[in-house]
Image 1 (tube, rainbow, N blue to C red):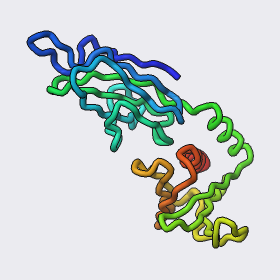
Image 2 (tube, rainbow, N blue to C red):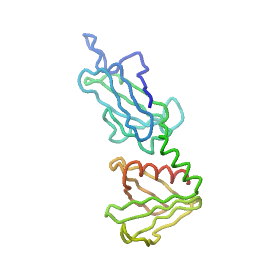
Image 3 (spheres, helix red, strand yellow):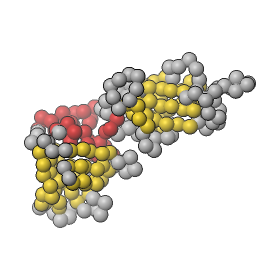
Length: 212
């Protein structure tokens, strides 16, 4: 875990006639998947907060606002791995934003080790359920990906609903509203799935992207 500091000389939120700095000494602690980013500083009033994710490797741009990430604490997910995050805080009366940039988000040791193991094995299996609580299994191999249906969570038999290779379009969209959910887009099909926990969701998303 690292600490990132406000780099600009100028405090966010314009000083007023009395020289009051509405946002000052802003800093962010975090930097690993599974550990929330926590921002702190010296605030006069309640600041407006927005987190951004870098969409490209260019230093001078490519940041996009993260939906619903408007508090001083932010829980990173699979979409943030390898990306630089930017925090902007504006004082209650407007003015320039105080800004902090993080380093690229790193994997925690357990997730890194587990992904390496799945890559060596060449296949992975993830259990999920639909919005209607129907059990689903995501099977990922070096050759293809399958979504399978189980009669129940206790059932040992399953039928394949859809199977495709990686020459077809494949996208994993992390659900910002559901910390354990994602949308798996396979060719013409779309599967809205929820896993057992946020870590399981992130592991599955990273694994699918890694094999694809």
